[in-house]
Length: 530
Image (cartoon, rainbow, N blue to C red; front, side, top):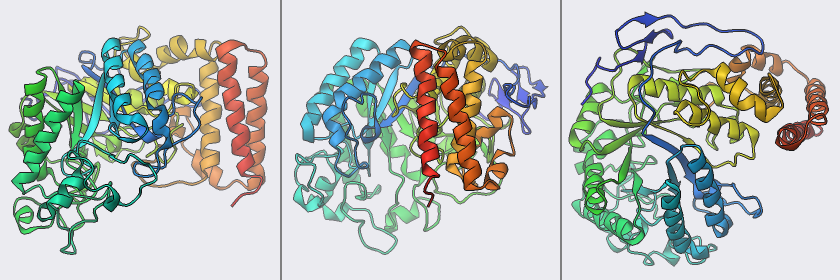
């Protein structure tokens, strides 16, 4: 068990870096223009390569094989994408296997329609062949339980139409046992829907149901692990639940609800497969908040006391997963300081950069933020990292995000110091046509991305990647631009991309042509702005 102050290397307040011997190295160096920023971690020492290297996905948002156009309509809507589930994820498995990524989390893994169960079964087998663990996302008291969507017909929308259709689906269980439902702040049970049903954590019958369901999942599909969550869209307000925890009426999750179900998940998994990964979602940051935060909210900091209590209740095999969006560049709200500690042996750090939850979108260029997450994780002793993997690497910004994730985790190009200049020069430049070509591509894309976005927000999910290209005032400049000026700038960038792509061939030409097409689509938005 790691206690406070015992981390081998952690970040100091103000951006310095604490090495294993306690020396603080100043590393606030930033180069202007198109030059790469120096890492805020300086030349700090790193721990071993992360043991857990994971892509996180919702099945409806995965788009790795565009020979099939349909996309899912959210987690609970009509998911036509499911018909192509196996082809999408097999392509993802192939990429992961080639780049040292050894796990894929899938929420919505089990759906009945479009032969979804058999597709999942085949994917688990394929993942084993390629050395990539397929890890279904599982709700304990929420998110549908073990079997996310039992609809045989995707056009069914009412829970009543299929409430008794699957014994491992949470709404089905709660429909049969309404006295076990969680109580909302209005004193009534939560709505009985796919994404709204909640079971009371204080009712032992619910935990026993989960254990049976989780055991069935391992036995039926021979999975090598899972990610488990208690739920983050509501809490139970019954008298029993109120007595055992802290937090306000507006809380959407409670740390106190995690220990017992996560312990049960670890015990069930170990019995089925001693080597199984059980990733336990904390919804929290282990860093120190810069100002007071409302408890019981997504991505807020967990106190040291809460960390220790949770870790003490779980076996060493448990893998705690942390949400660190508020602790990575470029607008950190949490600090990784010398006082931060990891309470458990196994920890996965994840961020939402380059995902459907980022303000900048799934096609966000997030190389620096992802690189820093991996570097800081390795420095402070976290042995796992995770990013979102829904978009295909045919999209150049997503490809770059995956490659820095892989390389800084110890795979891909030889780069033991996780140096950005080395990454751009040796890994990206050959893909973009030559020396400094990836920096030029990044400059155009990041600038144009913010022109298209057109607004600035103060939010953990708004990633200020304009700092990566040395333009901290970029958004202020864009906000002063007229529509005509924005169109002119995008047209100029499109011409640059066209001129460069015309001189290239093969995959390098494709990446610049992709950018040119993206720029013209962005320019089109300003032809008739709303």
